[in-house]
Image (tube, rainbow, N blue to C red):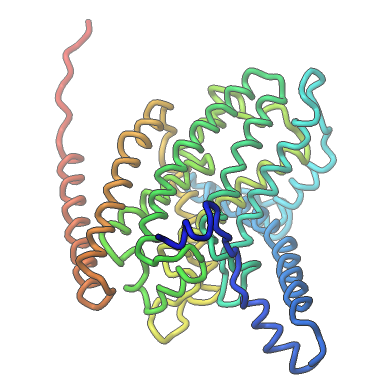
Length: 408
């Protein structure tokens, strides 16, 4: 009988290894200097210090990303963007934050005050809790969970509750409509996003984010995006679904100003509105960092044996590259209709994701070990597929539209 049943219906799950990075750091750096220092206490203090650094640094990311998006938008629209506050406008977002601090904190008199106050903090807290399991470097992470990717999926799904709370407690039909559309969108696109992650778990055989990065330490061609043709497709499904998860254009229907004012946070003002804004840009970087960890080598370098685009700088550069693509798409593509948005998820992404899972299983049976031959065949299939997709797309774009009969 399997061990699962011998241990009971709910076996004990160890969330962390008995020896993690914090314990290793204490034994390597502190114990030689202070032999009587308790290892357990040192591990807790090291993790608390690392968590404190993250709490201090991570909220600064949205300030940088907001300014970057305004500059990128200005570049796309052939203008200069913010230039008045600070050198080249670099202090503009700081000035906007100070302005929001002093704005009136309005609470709808007929709304649910408790839920109205809690909603932005739930979204804010869950957005930043995701960073606890993301490995930014070999020893730069808050906690090395054995089920790190499961933790990320679980904690990020709680954001939906904050969105619904914000819309319901505002006592406004526009806010309620925005929250329900946002909840439907987030819940729908979590399915192909999770299925895309499952292809990575099948290849690596581990849920630990650190182990997933460790399986990509042989250079760019060992990155999981090139490990099989199915993970290559899974990356694009993951990235597009992640854009929909964070309500970015062309999937920003919950915040479609022309239709429902400003979405679920229509009734919010001051710093409570700023918390939603900060959480959105933190989520942008978080999903990009998760994509880099799962598909693009994480903190591992491009060349085997060399730390080129590796470590913390390389990880941040790759993550910001994906963030830039999100900004690029926002100022390039028009907004989708709600039926188009749902059709893309349920009729295309989910079936393709199941096909990727089946294909990944078959690929694993054929190539039991990742070697030069399997990776070479995978890259060749990807190259031929891209050439074919480019040829089909070019032929469709070159085709002249058929004249339509006049309605007069």
